[in-house]
Length: 443
Image 1 (spheres, helix red, strand yellow):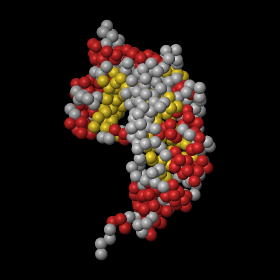
Image 2 (cartoon, one colour):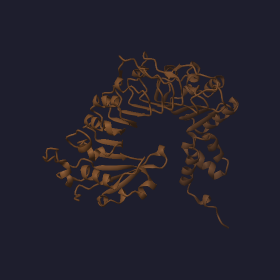
Image 3 (cartoon, one colour):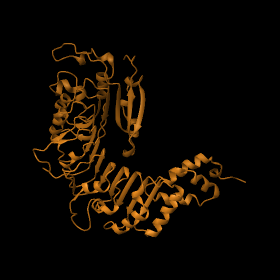
Image 4 (cartoon, one colour):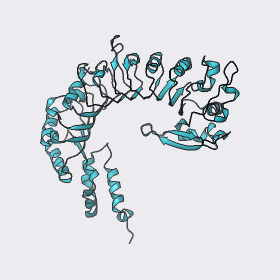
C-alpha cells in the first residue's frame, strides 16, 4: 500500500514546514498553528514542540472579546511567557473600536509583557495612529523592538482628518526602538519633546507630514527612512536647522520639498533611496564629508558639481547620466576622473539598455589597472594622469531577463571576473549582478 510522502517526512522537516505555514501575514497565524494540532497525534506533538509557532498572536477586533480571550489563554498554555509578535487588525471600515481594544488589552494583561518583538496595528483607514494615542492602552514598561502603524489608505470616508501628533503615540509606547508609520496623514512631531529610545524611524506613503523641526527630538536616531511622502511646502522655517547627531543611515525617495539645506547629520555614512540630485542635495553632500555609500540619480547638468562634492565616496549606486563616468573630459569641466576613492560601483540604468561601448569604457577606466596609463587617462594638457584600480566591484542593477539578452554581458572583459548576484526582496524580480576582477587581471 502506497504511503503519502508527507507521512515519511522527518520531524525536523515537518517542523520547518509548519513554521512557514504560520508566518503568512495575510491570515491569522495563531489560528493556523492551532489547526496543525488537530490533524493527527504526530502533527500535534511536533507542533507543540516547535516554539516558533506560538510566538505570534493575531487579533481581529471585529471578533468577540470572549473569542479572543480564549485564543489568548490557548496561546499562553503553549508559551507561558506570552507572544513576542502581536498584530491587531481592524477590518471593518470606520474608526478603531477603542472600547474593544481597551477591554482586550487588560484581559490579556499586555502591560505585564516585558518585551514585544513586533507590535503592529492595521486598519482600513489612516485614523489608526490618533486612535491609538490614548493612555488606556499604554505599555509604559514594555520594550518594543518594532511598532508598526499601517493603514490601507491615506484618506477617510469621514472627510478631512484632523491633525495629530506622533508624540502622543510615543508617550503611550515610550520604549519603541523602531517606529514605522505607513499610509497615515496630517501628523507632526512637537519640537519640545525628546524621544530617547527610538533609533529607527520609517515614514512611508504618508501625506501632509510636518515632521520638521520636531524631528530634532530623536537625538539617538540612527536610521531614517522617508518614502513616497508629501510635506507641505515651506513647512520648515528658514532659520531652522535640524540636528541629528547619531544618524548614520538616511533613505529618501520621492519626497517633494525635502529640506536638504536644513538637515545636519555629522555621523552620516549612508545616503540611499535613488532620489534625484538637486542643488540642495549637493549642498547637503558637501557638508557631510563622512558619507561613504551613496545611491542617487543624477542628470547631465549636475554631474560635475555632484562628482566634485563627493571625492571620498567608496560605494556609489548611480542612475541617470552614467555616461559622465567616462565622458567627464568632454562634457564637464572636471580635470581628473571622478570618484578617486571608489571601491564599489553599481550602474542603475533600468529605463534603457547599457551599451557595450559604454560598459567596456567604464571597466577600462575604473576596474582594470592596465588602463591607468592609457591615453584615456591623460590631463587635457597631455600629462600622464595615472589611476590605480580602485573599483573592486562593478554591479549592474536590473532583471534576470534583461541580463540574459544584454550585449554587454558577453563582453570579453568579463572573462576572468568572479560573478555574484543578490536579490532585492522588496523589488520582486530585481537583482544586482556584480563582477570582481582578480588582482592579477591584465587585459
